[in-house]
Amino acid sequence: MTSIAHLSIIVPCYNEELVICETHKQLTEQMKVIEKPYEIIFINDGSKDATLNMLKNISKEDKKVKIIDFSRNFGHQCAVSAGLKYCTGEIAAIIDADLQDPPAVIIEMLKIMETEQANVVYGVRKNRAGESGFKLLTAKWFYRTLNAMSEVKFPLDTGDFRIVDRKIIDQFNALKEKNKYIRGLISWMGYKQVPCYYDREKRFAGETKYPLRKMLKFAMTGLFYFSKKPLQLATSLGTICIGLGILYFLWMLIAVLSSLVHTVPGWLSIIGIIIFFGGVQLLTIGVLGRYIGNIFDETKERPEFIVNEVINF
Ligand code: UDP
Ligand code: MG
Image (cartoon, rainbow, N blue to C red):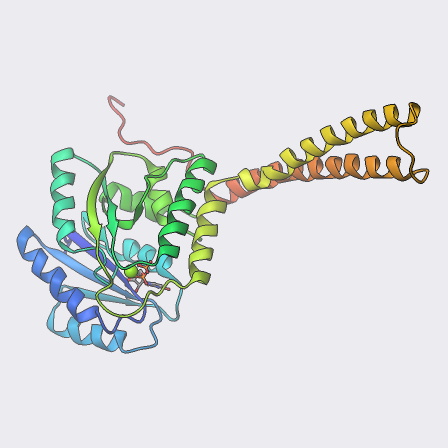
């Protein structure tokens, strides 16, 4: 039986050979402060470089280091999910391998968790060093749009860098949806969640492992798993088209009766019919969208509610 750690640090790694030793060193350094049992779980997400070998070497000398090696690259969110599934800690910290999230902030988060009696302490980025203007702009725009469209409200400028307690870990592991947008799901769970403000550093070494393609996929998961507004778009467009079609017919009637316009016979009415029935079609697609939305909600099998505590039962 493995001993239960107080803190589990979850570190997803994809081609991080340039940083992994330094990350291990800095995390270990910080853990001296808390003087409680801990484990560091590195998830090797199908790296093609020397990451796995280096991790194996580290784990030979440091038994607190555990490795989960994926059979191929499944993506950052899957790696973090695996870490949460395998961790034994009362508290889990999720941190990137590239030291953009400073390990010292974990200590700060632990203090906040204790004083505030919080279940989640999430990192909020005050500054983001060394990231492209494009990434900053798209991230800013994306999170605000998502908040406007989603039924769940998310804290802004927040990534997955956070600590969560056992309640959250167990609830998270019980979720049945496969495609997980972790920061969103943890927000959705509720309980007491408090921010911890920090400066995001430059990557210690190497390149970002989130090319545009992965960023888009990630953004789409966030959007389509937390908002049904895109499905409802057809309804709104359809209603507008039907309204326009009716107005157009009225105008046409007046124009033809009072001989205001002269066109090829039939042209005006055909345009009117196209607009009107285009609207009818969009509206019915929108109705289908509503049903698909409901099917989608049911298949996700998220629990209807999460109880924090029951009293006098
Ligand atoms: N990562 C991963 N699998 C992937 C892509 C990234 O496990 O397919 C890890 C990566 O090693 C890092 C973290 O996820 O620890 C965040 O990635 P990165 O720093 O490249 O993203 P950025 O900070 O540029 O958004
Ligand atoms: Mg990074």
